[in-house]
Length: 418
Image 1 (cartoon, rainbow, N blue to C red):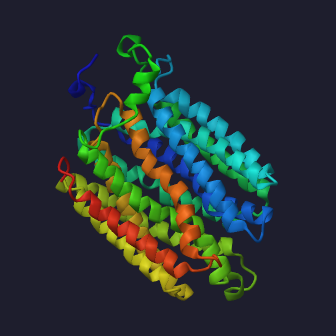
Image 2: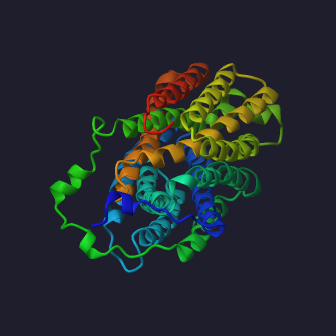
Image 3: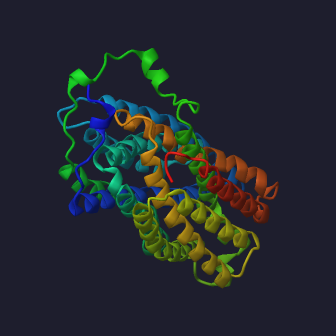
């Protein structure tokens, strides 16, 4: 078995690799974010107009629990895959095809239970694909390029979210067309990367015999032995709870509190969300690139991550004041700046504190719990903070701001990365 040092990638990646990888990320987020931000809230409202917030919370909670388990297991399984097609590629293909089928199940749901079932299927398959996609970063990208590559990959979230919101919130009205569009986006976005990826088969001699007890024990990463990893996990976890709250419930804020349809007669709240998403995307792209590239050049990640988390908290404080529409748009620009920088720098930081290069898929699965568990916790916090009327968005946004700021501060004690 190769030593840890030998397993670490050293060959620089080319522009074609970065371009295909970025397109794959964008395709994944085009398929995922509109589902969370628009399609699920609309489906929950169609199923139960009065209890829509509770239905959405239940769907998000169970889906996130399944996503957490699926991503963790999928990463560990891909680490051990000895297929002649590679370790990561087979799971990207199987997961993407399964996710496309899950969209059909969600679209056909007519009861809360059916919607939960469709979301569980989606989270199982999508995370099977996404865990393998993310694991390519430590597989192929050397430390000297991690910030640059992470900057490009971080564009997947804002660009994917914006494109998805514009398609789902503005261009496409038919439910069938909306679900078909995000399915096609996922499959077409992944195709060039899957076909061009250098994913050599893992020699069977490098895979120890499978023992269930050892496999399950290996899913645990000790915070005592790997404190930097634990701090990076907690920092991401707290910031992403805040982001999950905003992304899942901003639609209801626009619809029920700001009464977007009355502010702009003839227009729907989906269109307002598309506008906010678009302006945050425009702001996030340069700050993602700037944060990633400067953190490479200066060899400092923590300062940029903290500044980004503080920027997010400031934007959320403005949200809590129930601002006018122009002020909300301006605050969303600030929000986009913070989100872009944090996503880029944090991705590079995490890739540098993984406990083992050989088990990168499993370790990234553990890290990804900081992505998926917030989706389970956010609905619980939302129901609590919004109060009995489900309209106390002032407290809701203040809580999100506190979580974002705390997440940035948690990163500071990390020692292995400046």
